[in-house]
Length: 244
Image (cartoon, rainbow, N blue to C red):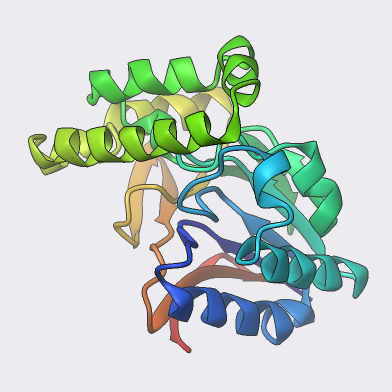
């Protein structure tokens, strides 16, 4: 049996090819897996379960996830920086289990740390302040209490502000901070870290206290290709790019 990990699909109605590719992935590739871990940013935006669960675009995706769960594949979801307002109603609708960030996975006798990845980008001080605000349960409660139209407008404004801010930042600032990676891996006593967020798929070799370690970075999905990490029983993680 296989364990699959994906992230950063950024699903939205304006990219139907990615949604179609994901539905095909759920119907075929993921059906053969023991577990599917979605490490954040499944959706480009999520303003609340009360709005999205019955949406024409979202409903088929939730139904496909539910069918996958009913067929025996365990589905896990971790919040990203785009869909941090996903809640328990979403989890119930698609048969998923919500994970904290970070999450420690023990598989094949190895401890593997799973993260979305945005908390590792500590050099982007402006974003880290924004992240702390949006993860605050009190702030989230205030936002979810707003009328839908106000939430939609807020989401549009936040995306615009994020795009403008990122266009003026150096690329290395928006990548992970190497020292933070080592710190987090040491704190959790792991030699393998898997995350997304940066859209820079790669496998990085590093040393932690003179011991070899690896950081796997998942890629973001495009209109004609996706990325996942596969872990076979008794095997090591493998980063894979595939077409659809």
